[in-house]
Image (cartoon, rainbow, N blue to C red; front, side, top):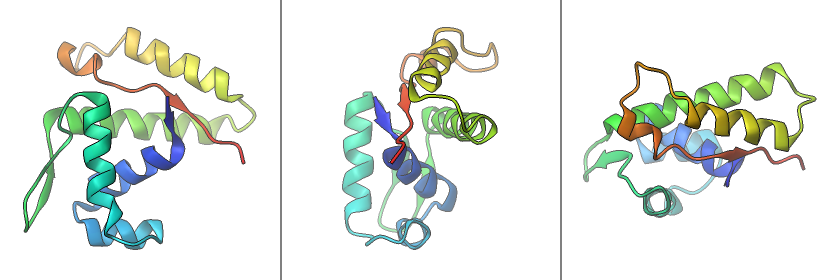
Length: 118
């Protein structure tokens, strides 16, 4: 299960397309972000970002994951009284029944999410 902090890290890097800007958005040091993204990609079994010393861009599966993360955040914001279990169930259903507009191979790599309620 993914925690919201890991989701937020991916979303920040994916939206800002720069580790330095993502770090500023998250109020963290830039140094651990590339390692966190690499660990995420290993866990999910697919590269989500193309990166080199000068730029970061989304892969096709990274774009699908970013859209999925945005939907999960929106769903959580709309229903703040939903339990973590309900969010996980809805996420599982989204993975089991992906939109026909998304490539089938991408759906297999989408994570299940669990919101942190601290």
